[in-house]
Length: 497
Ligand code: BES
Ligand code: ZN
Ligand code: ZN
Image (tube, rainbow, N blue to C red):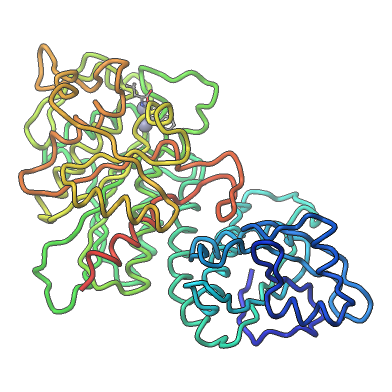
């Protein structure tokens, strides 16, 4: 879908979208058109109980005397409460209601009382519409035309189209990163495995990202027994990848912020094999790594003034004659040993080595890991918040704020010695599971044991938010890309100089 910004044109022959605020109040363009149509809109609003609440949409056939065939009324709610997120939501709703049209012309009036300018509103609306237009259809060879969305041109009519376009151009870079992540998350595991993930990530070198890849031999030399233990049951060999973006002005020595992703390209559970129902979902157990790659893409595309490194631990967790067994003890790169009680609790094993290596190699001041780590976080928070764990209140607060601002919300969970005691092992430094209770917290406790002194750390358990089974305004069902917008915002607000 193409996005265009132009002057508002009420005499266009394209379907028109007009804004109505709380209480069914027509904004200026709707008023103009109302006069030309014998108060069609005012009458409809009255008869149809259209209140103009945020996101409400009513599509009408246009009367004679109007060139366009359809008029859609969209509610903006209370202008005082209207924010960037509201505009994105409108964009998504407009897309989903009018996807059967070839093009639409959305007239964005300035809203008296709103903090958001018409230009900003236009750009955010376009961003929302574009995010909603995502489709992963590369493997459909027989889809009929009529099942495909027809909407090819989203035209935003606004007073100063060039200004709006400028704002949109930076948002579109974020969208590119989100789509990159959604593509990775949606790929099946026969296509996306550690080596092919690395190939995809190599595309980012075009944007100035430097890539370093470790193979099995290098990882063995470094003593990454936990990551390698997970990988040993699979025919696919593991990889550890680092993607660096050095954008901080004239300070190549500045310590970076690091993002680390769980990249289990398929999680069968290993010898502690998962039940077959729903196992196909485990193709997206590399969601954390996908977000890290998408985020790095955004930072590079928008030339963020930050030094950042993205690390992904890439493995496939399979049962076989060479797979690790429940009861095995592995030694991590840090020197700490782990008793593997359950081979399905593999993400923490992968992250233990990936996080340690990242800290040794890049000396980050702050480290944020993302992982589809536990089913238990879905029991706790459902699909509306990611679980957040942090050793630093300030970092936790910043993440929570960025979450509210982008709609990718996180909810802080506790850490503490009582939970840490649950992962004590009789024969090793720790075991990889802490029992049924507090499953997400004990998983985070294990990760915390691999955080070095002085490093600010947060862990986002994204198991509940990486994939969606229902459409929402800016996220069609499937891979969500949750985390890209959140962390891009975090970096933009707090880590760029
Ligand atoms: N990848 C899963 C967690 C998961 C579950 C992600 C559902 C997305 C949706 C993880 O590796 C896992 O299997 N965790 C186990 C841990 C248990 C064995 C302690 C779980 O959550 O059941
Ligand atoms: Zn697992
Ligand atoms: Zn897993």
